[in-house]
Each structure stands twice: as structure tokens, then as C-alpha cells.
Image (cartoon, rainbow, N blue to C red; front, side, top):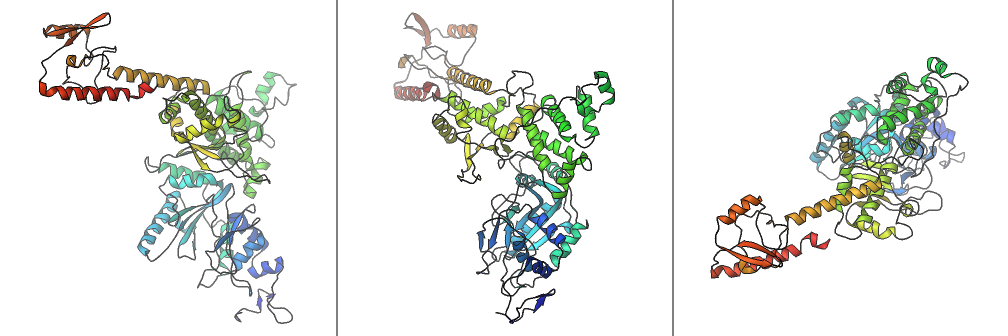
Length: 626
């Protein structure tokens, strides 16, 4: 063991009375070794790894900062202290930790990796990542730039409050930054953690005061921390169509990581002062004690904000009802608006809002999501049906992917429509489509004609045709941490946005299935009208049409002779009069006039080959499989 270690660190002896290196230290001694207060350590943990998350750790025996393993349990204070101490303690090799993200984060980061000797590529990716962070609104001096053992850097920007982790990737996508493993990675990431900063780097001296200076600057307000809503608005304003598939508003609370069935909120409370007359309530009571009866009252309620303690939930229910039922906002839009409104007007008024802002939690946002979910599913009148959620453009997308020549087409459309409705209710919209976890017992088997194992062939059919795609497999466990399979439907949220802009009427599942069948009928009728008919036509009576189109010839709609492109009856009669040489051919009880021309013997084989090819193509047409 090296003899370069000091006999004491910040007043803590590193040797026993026998002169041997100590192997154990109390929490108070480790904190004194750090040279920081408990409040500063708590602030560091709250900023980078709140709520004791799961984490990865390097193997201490190997000493390799890239030898990661998944640790058991949750990240505690002792692990963070050992990471910050590095190699300062004798007998303890440095050990790095990487906390995994929770539902919300107060920072975003770009990891620019450096592998090999291609420094030009690294410099180019570093400049692009730095420009992306500045483009989001993080000044260069406010970024925490942390070096990594591989020679790369972590560019970390901080918010004034927490934002949903599920929206971080979309935030960077809107400015053209894609997550690429081994190149430029976006964090927080749901599948792996980010190494904590201020750890010991190989071949470098550890600065024990660096993290303390940073956390003191952060607590003093010297680090610029914009609102994440402003950063999102800035990214959305610079979004260029075509740079990514689609962008969406942040799903502040609805995500595929949350339970599919959340607690149902009760209906808004009645007037708390029922003994007063209506006139007295109208003049003296604030609007919070009753639901707004006009758009003006709702607008005034929003402008006034939360009027006092104990009124947040009631006012939020009234505004959620106004957004969903009157302004026809989507669940994502309503949740985003309510969260911004509650946290902006409830600070200093609502104890729950103050607690969230102080602790960095999002309990109020979760309650807003519950309220919006209940409002979306609530019935406007007694006995009213559920609110329609499907739009014609989305149904057309499903019909386009399915095989409408199969006999089970109607059941497959109904299955896909119900899956889309469920994903839009309990899932999250992503650029590639709506995504939601769907369990067989609690979701699929509750639908009509899907009990038992009857859902399986329908699910296999829609997955085979690309309507649904498995993006995350199930997890079975006995401790309550299991999850269902997560599917992504190939129906992009931009279709709903476009339909709402065009003021299209949403449909329920039954109406959506009827609309899909009408699309198929219209397509089959169009194919029948545009197809050719060659049955019962003698070869010598076929007149080769020189004016046919490049796609196909058009028939007269009946079994008989080919009449070429459709003409007006009078024009067809004049055409026949101009051709006196004709043949009368009898078809059943009808006589049709088929123009003749003298066929050259050398052209007979070509006509016969054309006849066979046309008949073969007509039988291969999809309409014959209906």
C-alpha cells in the first residue's frame, strides 16, 4: 500500500492506535473528510440523484472506471460520499456511481464520447453539442462541463424546477440532436444512468473542493437555471419540419412508466355555502365555489389564479372541465396548461405547491393528471357515452396497413381501433406513434370478441401488418415491480392534431369500424369500375385500342365486349356510324356491336398473347379475392 496517504484528512485520523490504516469510518467522519456540511451534501444529492434511485457502480477491485455493474438496492449517502472522496482515503480505491433517472429531473445532459484517435470527429461533435445546449437557452458559463475517463465530456444544464424525464429525448429531437450510443448520448436516459460529476479521473489529481464550490454557487443563484417550460418553448420555436418525424407537447404526467389505471378523482364539490341564495353567491362568493357558467367566468377564474389555501383542487377541477369539455383540448394539452398554471399561481398560496417546489417533487402534477383523466372519462349527461377519440384520418391509416381482403378484416379493425383508443387514453404520444402498456387480462380480454384466447389471432394479425409494434417486453415479478408489454401503434399524434385543426368530428369505436368498411367498399367499387373484362369475347372480335391509358383499359361495366374509354351515348353512336364495317355478335339475349378490323396474320399471335396476359392480370386483381 502506498505511503503517500496523510495521517489525517480534515482532522480525521486515517490510522488506528496500532499504526495501521483504518478500514471503517463513521458517517460523521466521512462528512468531515469531504470538508462540507450536511446541507451541502444534501443539496448535491437532491440535485443529481434525488429520491434514492437505482444506480450502477464500478467494481472497486478492478479500478476500471468503465467496469460498470448494476448495484443492488438504492443509492444512499455513503455511496455518494465514496464517489466524491475518490482515492483520498487509504485502503479504498476510487469507485464511481451512476444514478438511474426517476420520473422527473432538474438537469439535462449531453455525453460526448471520445473513442480512438479521431480528434477531429470528437471536436466536431463537441461543438455541435455545445451549440445545442446554448440553443436551448443555457449560457456557456452556466453549464457544468465534466470530463470523463474516456476523454470525453458531459455538458450538463440545470432547470429552476423539475421536468418529466420522458420528454428529454423529444426536447433534443426538436433541435436536431439524436441519441447515438458511443457518439453523443442524451441524458437522463431511461435505460442507464449518467456518471456523477467530480469523481476521480485516471492520471489526474482529484480536486476535493470542486464540487463544494459548485454547489455553493448553485445555492447562491450564480448558476443560471431557466424554467424548463421556457426551454421547451425555445426548442419548439426553432423546430424545423422534417428534422424529426414529429414533435409533441410535453406529456407532463401521462407516460408509459405510470400505472395504466390511476386513482379516480371524485366530482367537484357542491357549493360550500348552500344556505345562501343564488344572488348572494353570485355577488359575494368567489368563482371557486361553483363551476364557471360561461367562458368569461372561466377566463376570469384562470386569470385570478388560486384564490386561497384549500381551494387548489376545486379550482383545478373546474378549469380541467372547461379545457376538456368546452375548449376540446387533448389530455396532454390540458395537463401541461394546468401544471404551468398551478405552479405559477399557487406558489405562496397552496401548501402542496410550496412543498413540491421546496422538495423538487411533482405530486401536484400527478394530481392534475388524475383530474384530467377523470374529466376525460366523465359523462357530460346521465347515460351519455364515452367521449369519442378516433378521427377519420387515423382510421384511414389503420385501413391502409391492414389486409382488407381477409374475412377477419372487420374484427382486426375493431381490435386496432380499441387499441388506439386505449393508447390515447392511458399512453403517451411519441413521434412514431401512440405508445402504451397493454396487458392481456386487464385490457385485451375485456374487449368484445376478445375473451379467453380469441384476442391472440387478432393481436398477431395487427402486429404482422405493422399496425402495432412491441417496443418493450413484459416483466414478471412478485414484489409489485412487474410490467405489461408495451406496444406502439403506427398512428402518429400529428394525425389527431391535423384533424382537430380541420375541425373533424371524432368517432367512437363502432363508428370508426363502419367508416373503415365504407372506405373498403368505396375502394372495391372503384377497382371494379376501372378493371377490364375479357370473358366471352372471341379473339377475332377484339379491337386493339391504341388510345388506352398507361395503367389499364376501361370496360363498359358489363360482361361483354371491350368498348374502350367511356363515352357519352350520343358520341358512341356517332362513332359507330362513322364505322360502317361492323359485326353483330350475340351475347345471351343482347346484341352488341363490336368494331372489326382486318387482322394481319403475323399479328394474330401477338393478340392472343395479349388476351391471355390481360385475363391473367384481371384474375390476379385484389377485387377477385373479396
